[in-house]
Length: 211
Image (tube, rainbow, N blue to C red; front, side, top):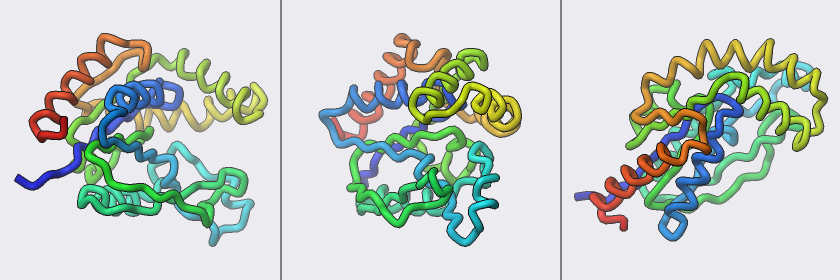
């Protein structure tokens, strides 16, 4: 049987706890061959647009992502070949000239708000997870993150959430929950669900003789 990496998809809304869940998986299998591929790195290159147009980018819409490149890179990694992961520069709202070299591994964690929206991506995943967290908790987490880490005002974060993040979540992200194999309520704080999920992943890896 041909050896093939295991792809674990972790989806969920902004502030849902995807990062905590992803980190839990990564840390559990840290001693093994594992890598993370974040959809956030694959926003479309917009260097051909004037800055005024780039400033209008809706980063919560499926069309903001270059899924063609992400799928190409994922397929390359599945062939155990390295890729040059793009870097997105939010200060100028387009792709940077820099890239990050990514070597292939036996376990690939694909993380992002809309990774379950594209059927082509779903078909490449062995396990699909959706981190399901109440909207009030997600907005609080986003507020704290954007104010502390990104230097934004409370008013600007709330305005963006109400006008962009929330409607995009309801229209595009929430419906993808139906594609998940495992739904994890309350994100990284649901240790029972994470333990069950890790056990499932261990079983798959053992079947594939990775452990």
